Length: 217
Image 1: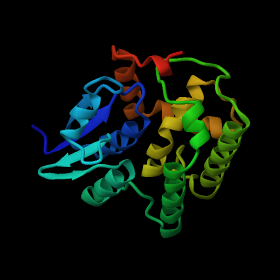
Image 2: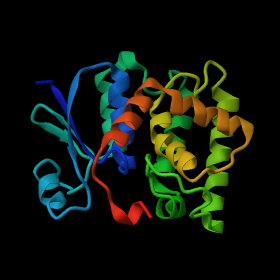
Image 3: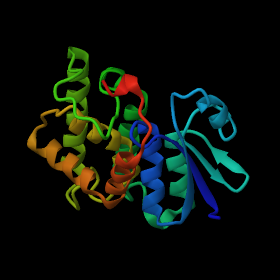
């Protein structure tokens, strides 16, 4: 039994679960995972066993728990400093935290009209003016980070950081809904999609049997 356990929702649908799972994978430490199917009659009671908020994801470290995606990322960054989960440069680190928190708190239209569904393909679906505005802002964030801080690699700050994990579900959404992106943003999205950890999540999502009808039509 591993020292760390992460409690997740379905990998096909749970964008919030993907974020800390990617971060945890990047630490290289072994961990256990518990996947709880969402939108069933037993979902709430099963999650409550692990989560005081009644939501996933949850990180369990011995008898200590962290129950929110960005907080899990911060906890892992402190627990595994050698993983360099935030940029080392102070200004880059502040910028990475700022865009991570903006992703965490914003983009409600995109979340509502283009929910994450790794297995699906819905070209053009959900593209409202409000969603287009969200996409434009995300493209601007990616472009600025790549231009200012990303010259050392293919990700927002060169190497992988928590900021990339925060935007990974957006990358998945853009593929599901076939969102056309400028070259810089598309190259970044492709780099995230190609990460070995992301590919492992995608394979697991495609192997799941559960389906949530409201997200599959």
